[in-house]
Length: 391
Image 1 (spheres, rainbow, N blue to C red):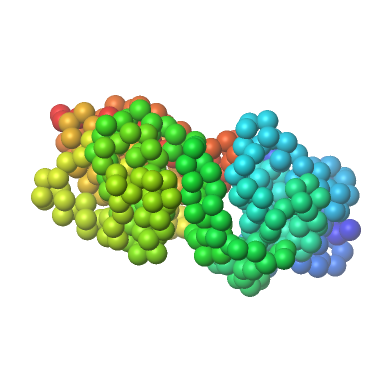
Image 2: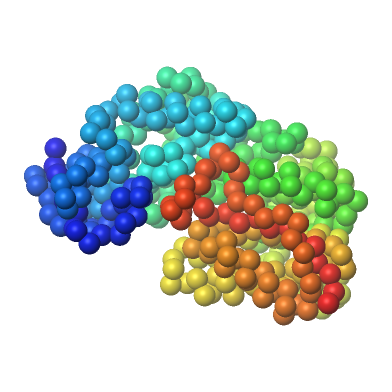
């Protein structure tokens, strides 16, 4: 096995448990490196750092799988996935959940989402891609699934020298399925939906709106397939309008409303949220609750400034449309914007909108997406409800 020795002066994060080792942290290697293979990593003092897979082409040269001198084989992956499933079962996430959340489940660059008896996987690095047969075998052993599909149509794979691709990893099946969440039904398009077809990370937060939407007029922007809005209608909102720039998403959202018999309360229209909120502010439209669930706005640190400007703008516009004493429900899904920075941005938006805000709740993603302290990319979702009133 190739041995990798780290420089003496490296970030303490590796010793503290972070699984990523960058190329500039490596002092030397012993043996012939084959991209994607398992290597043994040592600190400068020759103490074992762990075993993981290497890819010299990637900025993250090594991703550690274990801190022990244990064999990495099919049994290793079966055990890790079993443990991930046991964790979800303990917490009550059994029907739909993120079964494996990459580094947070000690399987770097692997995502597995469970929708009923169907599984969607993403193998986002060369090292984990090479273990895909073992991962599929583990899923078949533990779950005997109705179907497995890969959604590897993501640009990050190209940084690893991998092609973008998607398709069946089992016998073909109908990729349009229906899942249950919080007593509601939703269509999930595994093949063509965003990410793996559905955003499971907000499933707990969608319950958190229950009290603030009762009897309320509700506006939702960046609705995607309408999950927050349909929950609002289900929880007793008197009227819900959802907007999204995607015609396809709006069509799916209206189907989801009808699927739950809520089409008379909840409707969706294709509109640019920034333009619509600005126009409706001029027209002095008002709602009891405004819900904002925008996309990440940035994938790179270089564009954080632009992302913050976008978040501030959309939240400022949203607050201006809220009746005195109403509620703003707002989210950010990029780990590049820290929780503190997100709250500062909302505070700045409130100041510019000349509004007072009072926090009702502030949460992260649902617990099937566990957070590991010190691993920023596992602590990515911010979900906030505030009461909004005039100064």
